[in-house]
Length: 425
Image (tube, rainbow, N blue to C red):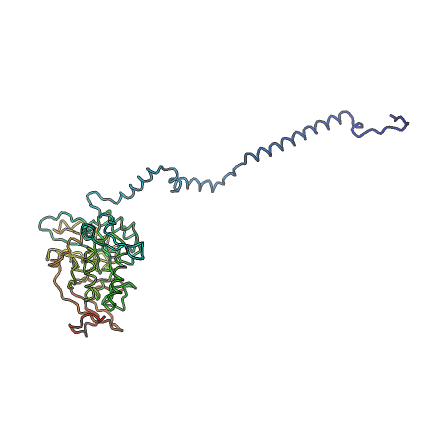
């Protein structure tokens, strides 16, 4: 072909393609455009509906385990009424049929501590209610002619496992003493209360073996001023609530020096004013002051084997039968002690002996029929260099206690005259 000017016309590439070539290009061009449009549409759709990543096999297994055991999931799906019922059921598991629980702390019988919103001091109630009555354990029925024994287990609260074991394995009349330095564990006290165990606060007091044995920075000391001792006493009494009284039994020691000094009269008056009991854990020593109190007949060595514990419990029974009643202080707690106590308690009725709470053997006057009157200790100032304690000492730093029915030797008693009295203020 030629143009009007006579020049030849050059054909385009498309025109030079044979018919089958043009058909090939049209076909695959259409396919490509369709695929491109499909890809664009798919991308837009994915943006509107993002995919969730598939979990790995390990994470899937972990999620399954969490779904079965995780408390938060249960809390989200459990109705509030059902949750409350579950909590009440768990608390009710420590209520023993036929055992009267100790009442919870009563707000009207608590006095706020100035400057310490988290702690309270016990006081008499608006109608004259007293802690020694309200928080005392119930006395079981005593067959006629039966002697009475009471056990104060000291060191409760220092070990959570042993404390729970003691509260749940020992009969309700067994009483517990909680050291003032023990961590605040409301749950332990709750278990003891629900299972009928009365609680004493264990006061740190200066022992006759001081300064070798130290009952801590808040100990009551006969060489302190009255102001310091009263401040330490109020600190100790405010550590927790709902106890029946106080004692000088303190994790294997008994604070015998301060407890038998004239300075203790301040403690006695304070406890009486607040409606509390006092258990004197030093066998054979004289009571001091007006507070309603009882006396330990013996203290037990808990750092011994089963045969040793059994022998001391037999001695306690013999004392109770001879004198009508007897009180034992045992501590610190050890597994063999708890196991032997539980088995021993189950045999008492067959021996003509009844286990009763410590509070039931505390009296205002007349003394405990299970204890001899004893003589007062004359306390002298602690010497700067003390000789090692004699074998008669009841308490030592290791917590070892020996069965004893005689007064402890006072510090410096070998040189002190009967009229030496307490240290001067």
